[in-house]
Length: 406
Image 1 (cartoon, rainbow, N blue to C red):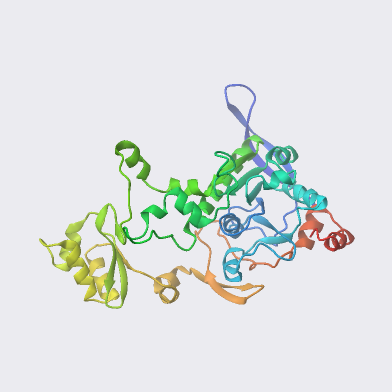
Image 2 (image 1 turned 120 degrees about the horizontal axis):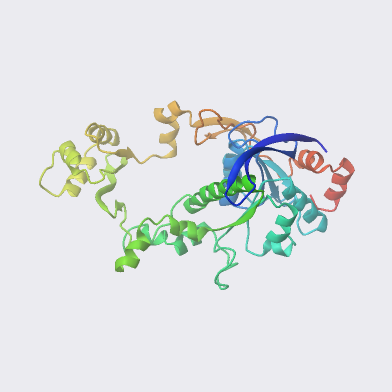
């Protein structure tokens, strides 16, 4: 097996009074599989075995910042991700196929987890327990591993909810986001698009897994993290629940106007829409539109309706009022501010060919991320990962393929 030594400096304890020194510990790790090391997450190996958006997107973010991500999919069929979305969100990931219904597949998967520091998965609770891969068994095999479970309603709690089918819209509705979006009754509540809760959940996945990784590297102790998507939705409701518990107030839908700021919202122009957010500074907006005593909201609507988006934005911006055009894909593709930041880049996708889309976000000054490869096909990296990482031979792989294991 190809091995190399990595050095870590870690505080150690030799009594109950806390850390007294730093010692140099040397750990043997499997030689990295990426063609080069880059980014702030270089040296971190992540196993990703989830489907749809939230968990794989989180893994993709890590891969763009230098983590070595091995994404596990079902043989031949993959995970059902649309090609367009996959091209944007599965770059830099090493893709292997594996059937966990077989004993050989489960053994290979456990060996992958033993080589990693983080395992990200999204499934109905109990899925991996049926494979004999419950947290206790996995942590026994790799005590340092950080495990992140992503589900709609969490790994435990009310048995009537645990295990129910749940996707982004369900989490939005149950977590409270849907009740505050859209126009007032009798209009229907609105779902946030595109899959906003899934992408919010991705950020929770990454910051929590990296927080646990810091702890695991310092102590040698891994742990499991339970992320319920509806709880992520609930977490970002601002002061909604404080208002309710203090005085019984229930927030409702306010359409395109911010509930706490009557002059913030969307306004129609002669050639499109703008968003205005004066944030309580009505003096600047009064000066900009020349209205001092009347109905300011009506005056602002009349002001924007008689002007183009560019004219409206220029006038309000000169007065120091925060505003923006409601941007569509064609606007963003041609806008000079997007171009100046280099936000749109090109890369080669294995299925779609040469594509152009969104580059690396955020930007690191010393350890920038990069795109070294587009999204890979199902099982594209079986040979690289299984032969180099697990020492399987060519004949081993051929037998596993014939059996439908990979």
